[in-house]
Image (cartoon, rainbow, N blue to C red; front, side, top):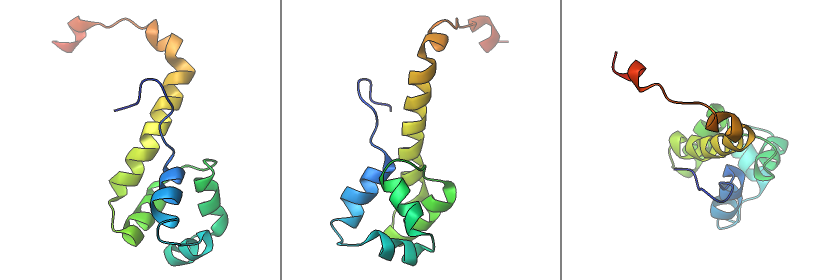
Amino acid sequence: MLPKNRHPIHPGEILRYEFLEPLNLSQQKLADTIGVTRVRINEIILGKRKITPDTAFRLSKCFNTSPDFWMNLQMNVDMWNTLQAHKNEYDNISSMPELIYQ
């Protein structure tokens, strides 16, 4: 569920504060371990890059989580950003309940 009054936490923050720092793991070591560039990890941590399915599979394998964990974090950010960008448009769309039951 999306938070109502604040931007969801970017998966890069979770990666940094819940995984890298507690494990005393450098961005370079993580990048080498999962087979990506350090720049890719750094951009994710800075919120400049999204978690892709490929990255989600790699992180899940490394940290014994699920790919869904990472993808859901990213989806929440994407959904929030889309809602904020188009909220007025969405508010002007009326539902058509008669279509639901046909």
